[in-house]
Length: 136
Image: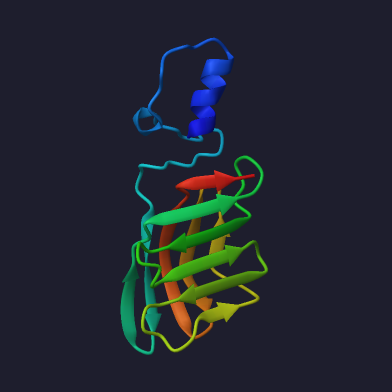
C-alpha cells in the first residue's frame, strides 16, 4: 500500500495519505479483496468438512486463473490448485494432505475455481472459491 501513496505523490498529489484508508482492488483480474471468497465442502472418510478460507491467492494472466492457494485464518486448512496438473487439500486434523495429479471436476475460471464433486486423493470436493488477491 505504501507504493500506492508514493506513486500518488510522484504524480503531483501532495496530500499525506494513510494507506489504511485506501481500498485497492484489482478489477483487471476480477480479484475482490473484501468480497465473498466462497467455501468448499470436503468429504473425507465419511465425514464432511466445511472449508471457508480467509484468503484466496490467485495467479495467471488477466482473466485466467492458473494457480490458486486458499488458506484459513489459522492456516489449519489449505487448498491448492495448479492448472490441470495438480490439486491438494489439507484439512485440519488430517494425517496427511489429499492430492492428485489429474484433477477432474475442477474448472479454473476468470477469477474463481469451481469444484464439482472433484476427486482429490480420497477426498471429494464441492464448491467455488473466488480470488481475493492476484499476482501476475
